[in-house]
Image: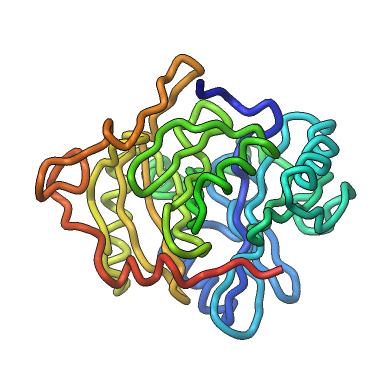
Length: 306
């Protein structure tokens, strides 16, 4: 049965390496509509309108874009030690032991890697923004991301990666399709999904918008800025969420999404036979073309680095 995690309360943020911080900041503030939460000499941290201190961290590094880690928030401080032990038992490694987090947002955390090199940070007691930081008019906030909805990670061995997520972080399966395993830690249908592929790249990062109208407005704004919609608009089957996909700077695939299905422990996890489309359809609405070849290529180009 699917269940909420006893160790992880939410997906908090994703950290990437990029070759040009100035270009990235200009895009994520002016086009993608995030705000700068903090900065250092070689990193910029971006927040949405929700309470998370930041939901995206970009670090300056030479070479192609890469992913540094996916950060999860622990339900309790004691979960950090449990995860550290479970990671080793499951064939992973502890990259940094439980200690104070030095980056903006703070808290206490640790970092672990799974057997294939995916890096996860688990934090507790990190800074949360109060509602007072909402300084935008209602119509402006409507067009801004709130928080991360999910991160999708490719896997050349989905069942093994799924086993690690279950054993270490107590994630559970919410749905399984022919090409993806959807995993949840709270009431969101999924916070992490695993792409059933021949590689271990970052598939995409999804940003939760307040409503479908904001997903559509975001698509128009991106197109005005020269970023075409590579898949969408549409509404997924698993998760029931509306979507528009884009390729951002440095080949990072990003998604605007809204109306992610909320589930509880009574939800029955579907199997591939439960998620099939009529010929010519790739989503519930049936108006979207399939993902572009450019998108599919980008979804296998950004890898974890330690």
